[in-house]
Length: 143
Image (cartoon, rainbow, N blue to C red):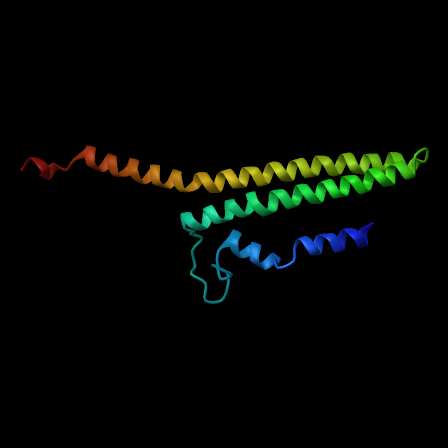
């Protein structure tokens, strides 16, 4: 079971490294804590969009696929141990796994939405502050 899964997983991931995903999610590998880093946590709207797209096109589908594969393997094992206490143990493990996957998928979805919404929040905030300055006027305006 685990050998087949590992081979299948590696075939699906051929050409994509964890580093590649990390760069798309976190921007360039340098950062505020890296030697020579910029010292700030800023990211551009394009970087936020790229990170959200990586979550949508890679992390969510790959997580779902891995979860389904684990479910299939666990259900097969559970059937093999039918009538034994091991079967009920596998059922409990499967239920716990499913709950954890639902939680993870929800977290990924929330992070994706937050990344996509962050740029809009900044633009609306800047526009609102600009409007306040325009409306408040200066005491010098009447001179």
